[in-house]
Image (cartoon, rainbow, N blue to C red; front, side, top):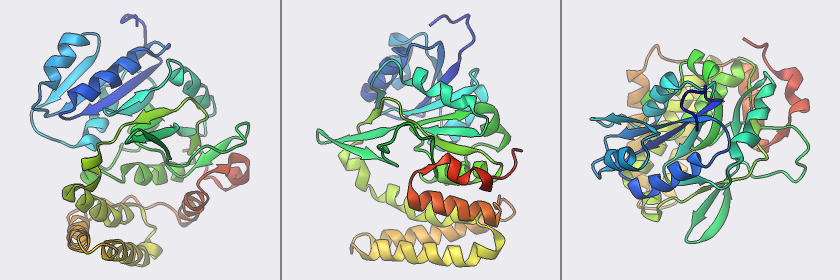
Length: 310
């Protein structure tokens, strides 16, 4: 990369105590063909992450936090600092599999209706590949849109992201992408489903079942609905999400106390955020539900239902 040139995009990698995996994530980003900027947001790591980045990747912009803020807040901060018009987010335990992924993604943004792009993401668990998120439609010539994007495998218009206030930082972790995608859809922008080379994600097996992480999941099922639900649907939707949390928790005797704790925390957070709601229109909500149910939809089918561009 030529540091004097204006980057065509900024890649943001949020990290905490994963310096070995982070090394691979940075290396795969540096291998990209385009003129990009890389920002690593270190969320109060204690394993020497900052020293590793400074020593091995001096061309990377490192921002270290003394106190833990959570990946959502860190991504918001990085977007404000970014110099590129498009912000890519990559998890610290993921890699770009080819040098051309960013090159393949940028042309999608020629369409002003595209607010964000969901990149193909494959989880590598115990050596096995499992395609994640919306999957890949067989007809790759169609202009497919979807309901949301995976935070660690995405690209977003920076100006749009900032104008909408970024992610809801109070969510801390989990559920921020769908909540933001609803607000984005409310101003007439959609999530394009990319047909690029995939991102490989290597989630730690022990991390998928941590109690704290699951509490956040249940909490945010309540809180994210609170933020965006149209007023006529607020109570019914919160009731539905509560029932879903209980049903999910009841499926495993060890999960039920976690689900109940998450529900209580969720409603407590709703009361703490009174006046902070950003409800979407009823028409947008119906469209989002349809996109979520169908997973991927030809853009031409829903173009006439989009809100005017704000």
